[in-house]
Image (tube, rainbow, N blue to C red; front, side):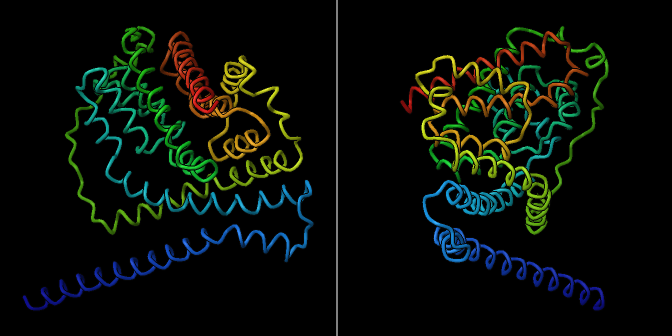
Length: 356
């Protein structure tokens, strides 16, 4: 009896010791993060002008300064936010998400699905399993689409990069309008009663009614999940960030001022729908496209136009659309692209009007 109690005390002491170590390490990392982030501008100046010895205000210097400054800034923000979102996501498994959405009315379900799409793990490869799981569990078709629209469009990578490159106001507006598109598009698809355009076998296959038992995860394990999320997500997107910022640096340094105004400026009324039409068949993620968007803005493109372009590239992902062809008929895919595309165009014009 005493031996068992002794072993239990040792185990509890060991867990407490490990937790304290993690807190010390995380606190040290946070202090280091703050120190680097707050002094990044000065460090970039020192590296570019003192160490490399480049002359100020040349095309090459502007491009190199942009690249050296933006890459660590975006990666620093990404690591911090992905860690926090990784912890939040540990509370929202796909099974729990289905349970929350099941039985909800159309509009309420659209709002909930769009909101949950922001914090639920999602990638193009999981589109079919999620779609099947939702629909076969009784989640309405329109509510399912709200989730599928919001999840890729409003993710932590996009929001971090928008915040880092444009500020919190733009990031907040993007998140709000992205949610609005997901809610309204899902609601419209639901009201149109388009279930007949879902492949027949989807509804014939009934989801297994397995009782969902919520697992209680200790907070230290949630911290581990946050660290794992950083490793997995940053490992996947860092190369896109570097390439995107490199392209953006080239535009920043060498494209003449106001060159893009004639193509993507506010005065070109056709620029918003054209940018959406160009963006729909393209494929990139937020990490690759947002630095290019920033560079285009600096050269005279309007905010609404470039954000509409970005939304169409990210929100109407070509791989996701191709994958969904296995469960949806072409008519529904066309309606899905059309409804979301119109929503993005309206948002583009709205941004151009607000920031006129």
